[in-house]
Length: 370
Figure 1: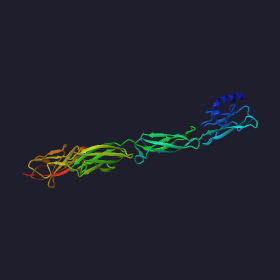
Figure 2 (figure 1 turned 30 degrees about the vertical axis):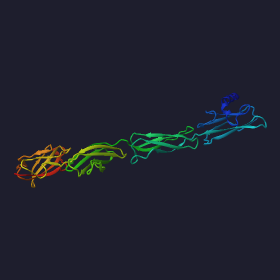
Figure 3 (figure 1 turned 30 degrees about the horizontal axis):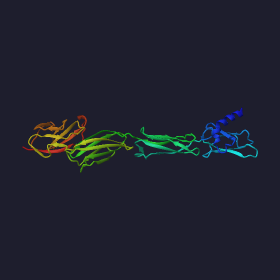
Figure 4 (figure 1 turned 180 degrees about the vertical axis):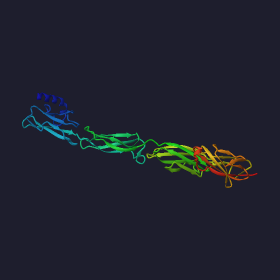
């Protein structure tokens, strides 16, 4: 029975064995061999125990080094070289066949991971990043390593894992490449602009992840170029030194720690806070007092003085107040008598009963003549 098994293996390996150095003779091969498991011709790398069997010619009179051997230990890059020598006749020539068996059951190691670029801002990536892993192997050699592109989700403590595989099919333990990723810009939840005499007051409310605000204005004070007028972490900015009646366009941009930015645009046209009558105007009739609108104001407080005495306090909902020749204030009757008057306006915020006012909108004066 053993002889029949050997013959069947010899027949199956005849073509492979005939091509090996020293395996062929004039009357056919003097010795053949086979490996189990496949590949049977012993080529390539094995990572599970492999058995090498020799099949010398049945007529051989002297056989050396042809014992069956099972390999369970790594053989290194060169493999374990095995040689079977056969003499077919006494004192005749020796035919030798050499076979290197390659065995590697040890996984490679991942030695590092290299991103395709440094972080985009302050250690953060804000767009897709490709990471290539590298490895080393002392046996079969590295066949390939993972290459991964990360494009989300956003994370402050994320990681990409990669492995390497050797030519024997062993796979390494995964290695983690840590990263911080944020591709979502912060939002500007609200923004508004109030104007006054030669200035614009900008206000905004950015999302909690915003770490910096930048405000740009066009045109610039002395030209048409866009100028950055503010950088910081505040929630408001007063832009002074502007020309009344000029339309200014402001771009408010919020940045997060990863360098993502989102913008809102505001338009402001500065005007004198109190529009009419013009400062120092001489009037014969009761004038209409007019002032600039404040976006958050629900009403206004107008106070009129003659000399050092307050003679009127009113709370109109609109942006003008018509004076009369006579009125009552603080329980007394007042008249618009000839003389110099000063007037002030404050914006009222919220319900009138809350008595909450914004900054003084402006002050002006007029003169009543006969």
